[in-house]
Image (tube, rainbow, N blue to C red; front, top):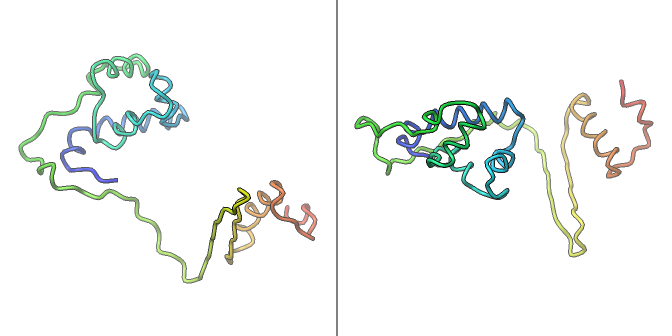
Length: 153
């Protein structure tokens, strides 16, 4: 996701507030959209969470009523002369841990019959593999000569 320093400086407080509220309530962005009487596939709330826009007056009022806070919380901060120009994008990404020194392969294809074929070739400790194997067994996607009780250990 690309945001400018100006976006972050002006709307960062809105991003943080909304993310905290969604997490606290266990809501998705779709849940927020529905609570605000927006279309379920609306991208409006996503833009707020990216910091690329702020709620307008009507939605500020709806948000303030929904979260029982002042509508001013959802106002973007004024432009600051010290803020770099909007043309200087900043790439915000989460840092992922370095890949392990082993080869893991996951492939996914969909056949003409509409069935998905997933292949996983991975080596992992039994403690990590057991929940995955249980899920595949429960879904009927894997069959094991090992009794399910043996996986309880």
